Image (cartoon, rainbow, N blue to C red; front, side, top):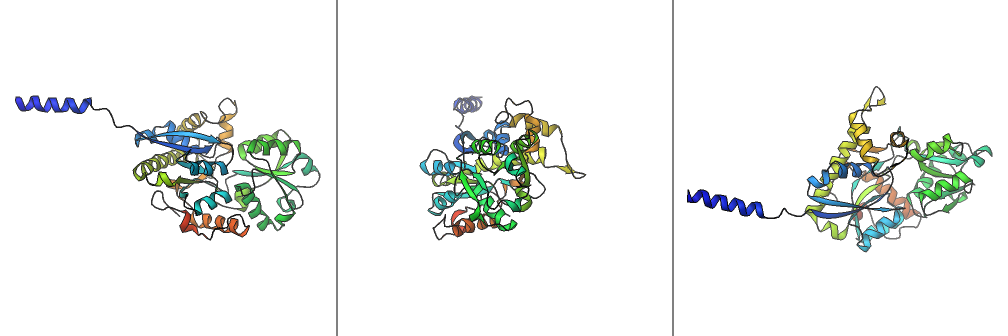
Length: 333
């Protein structure tokens, strides 16, 4: 009987102990559809289940996310890999740990969009972009990279294109709608409504010309030292990717399947984007892109991106993929 009392007292002490606090992880991202699996991981409780309390910090462009990680304002980030990112990673401040959104042939993700005025004046195909103005966020951005790779494939000289750095995506859309630039790029959920309104015309899709790892997950150096928390964060992210793939990437009979999982995912994502747009659900479906299973990273493509930025003189450090990628947290392909 005394033993039972002692056991009960011990159990009472254990119950009285406060639950272990969740590890805080600050994630930097764009407030767009592209990081949708992270929204799902948050809303579906996957991060919490892994013992991490994730807070989102939103930015207007890709390069400031990398700078925020270096300054200690965020722990991890998901965004496009830019010239500035590669330079910072080459100094050891950041490491790519996994893949995210991928441009894939057959998925109309990023449109090449021209103004109505330019289209009517003859800019009707990607091959004719030479000699025109093109809106990007910043020099060294993913948009700079994409137009550079497209120029290589389409046979026009990038040096003949007048690049206009407009700082953020909203400015890029406004510029092409008004005719202030001849062309730009926009995700499908922005490009299709602009075309439907007669404000611009879609002349091609990036994924049909350049299949590449458009965004990736990276960690700042201090976060890499918190291995247990980072692994827990990655497990939560992988569950979000699984939810995303189940909701949006199931194909039957050549068409995507819209199921109860799809509707639940749309409802969760709309807490972050298209929050008050009556057409928000359709815009989400129109802007779905590819995520590899498990958040896998396309290492060969990251190497190709690094080489392009080095060839353009935007990354001067003599670094290779092994200097900027930290394997072991998420799969690679």
